[in-house]
Length: 184
Image 1 (cartoon, helix red, strand yellow):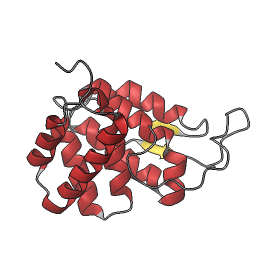
Image 2: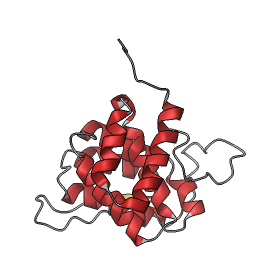
Image 3: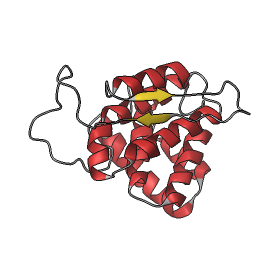
Image 4: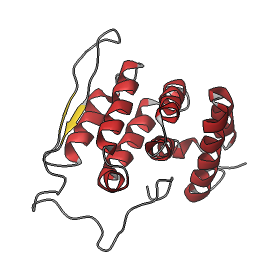
């Protein structure tokens, strides 16, 4: 009897990355979800959000749309509100590094948040938006709309990408991060 997850987080992320790469080729949402569920690591499912978004950032619109469909299909069975929210928080924590690698990443990420909200992840509204504001004291996230029929448009406006002096800097000496599932 296994009491914890079937593998460590780093192995889970490696397998999720392989599953998502295959998903980008096939477009088969159900197969990707089945593969992830078979891993038996629901405690790590939050990392799927960061992995999927990070992998899609330097790809084209087709892959980003596939990720949106994948996240939508994952909610709430594979990615309940808590896991989805925690996953978006991990993306927000890495947004400065992602922005270095992919200028405009903040805008792309805001599109993923909007899609999650439109697709019914209403429990994310306050938690995810609070995290988006927290990621940079100069950033503001505005989310309008209260029903699935309304347009929800989170906009992350950041007039300066450098954090103010009152916020701690990231780890010293870190170069651009590779867009994969590593680190968080």
